[in-house]
Length: 442
Image 1 (cartoon, rainbow, N blue to C red):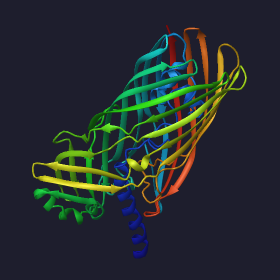
Image 2 (image 1 turned 135 degrees about the vertical axis):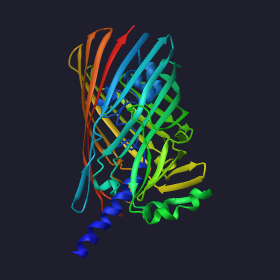
Image 3 (image 1 turned 90 degrees about the horizontal axis):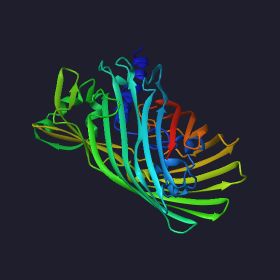
């Protein structure tokens, strides 16, 4: 029996430690931290977007495609629902995440006057989290829930210009905000080795945590649209589209790495606690969390008057922003800094889709989204397993009138099961995502 208890306790401690890492990893588990597509037209076609007209969702991908629209104005009101299903297990223990539904609204308005297109958009870049019960093995015996939730949004100011009849250029200036909640637990002996420095009595007293059966860092609010730790910043993107032939359009875009400020709670918005009644209030600062740069290129081929074929390839620079997750806890008695290795790899994504116009009102769409998994097995974790690599998409569009249109998409991300090579934790992840959009033209 002694051997059996030891064999269970070891993976349990590893699982609790992985939970701590997981809360520190603010990720969308689709194409890494990016959605598989933005707007239901593109998403229904596997996320292909670089060389087709798909409305104001172009602001989130290739803004030059705005020049493919006709004269006048367009208003898009959209709603996305991200539905992850995550289960983690180690030995005889398993836990399902209760975080299965995350809402992402979007609004876009653009107007074309002659060769110039301009407007405004508000998009949820992404949002996801996990919710594990207080009695799950991921809570490490602390008796409190374990959760995480990230929300990143953008207000986008686009401008596109028809340089020649065949060439258009576009760009956006993106005003960004980010919010993060974290509640995680780990054995004290696993948390203390993550410390990289500090000062004051708070830092000097950390040795007491090493012997604690559990230790926690908590900061979380009750809102689905904000986080306890918040930041503002900006980013930008540039794009082009080129009409190579009447039936063939080429497109490309580049998104720069974001310039977000450090995410911070209020001075008493977080707690560091441990077994034995230790509860220390303070501030959490998440240091240099950024959204990665991305290069994309693709084509749109009008194979027949009814059939459109589109495909993109994207390269996302995760290694430039996800090497380490760094955060600091501080209060009047000092500060403690932590660093958790992530070592994400750069990711290649292939988006392929088709759209078939059944008649003047109804269009059917389908596609696939195939991607590398950017998260190494050594750092994958139960709370944010950004490991999904295959998406299958369908959707439709229906025009009620020349001015009024509805589009929708459904994405099925097949189950991907990975095992952390350091902890032995097996994590299964699948998704069912929906996007809906109403369009009115003026």
